[in-house]
Amino acid sequence: MSAVGLREAGAALAAESARFAGLGWMRGTSGNLSMTLGRDPLRLAVTVSGVDKGELGADDVVVVDAAGAAVPDQPNPASRPSAEAGLHARIAEVSGAGAVVHVHMMAPVLAAQRWPDGVVLRDLEMLKGLGRGAHGDVMTVPVVPNSQDMSVLGAAFEAGFDPATPALIVARHGVYVWGEDLRQARHRTECLEWLLRFALETD
Image 1 (cartoon, rainbow, N blue to C red):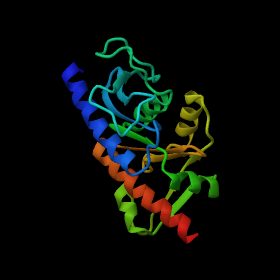
Image 2: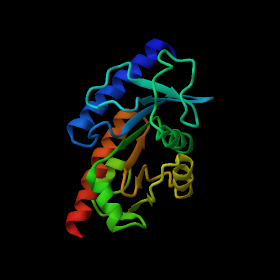
Image 3: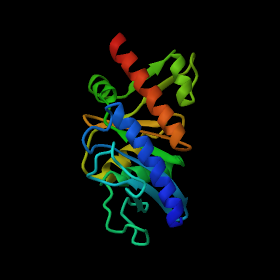
């Protein structure tokens, strides 16, 4: 991708990061977003690590490979991606996602604490926002134990991957949601938060 195209991706990621930070879902410097730039070889644009996600600019983005490591041939090779970029890459590779959102909103963490074997959602209109049926359809959001090793988390994600369920909760940590593009990933994240809050408050 050209430097201009990468900057456009960075601007889109910065705008969405500011939106999520405003909702309190990317507190401090937590969370990260990514967009898939290419698939052969796999390349992702990922928000930089250690920066307030409400204050990102178009240049606060790193290009990473399938392992989540920064590639040298980019405008800002000194920028550092989060270690979690490795899981973004695994999700993009396995699911074919065009964008992945990782935020630390409270609802999925609480839901995983209550239902560590997976969060079951059914008979709710908002499920349509994740591409599921409002009635007669059951979606189980997988929950995996937290780990600082992204290869461990990646293997756990892939073992429980369901193409019809575009989300993964990492226990006592946060949630990953993905979509064809950044807008769809954002919409799915917002809908999932509503669904999880409903489940928690009506259990």
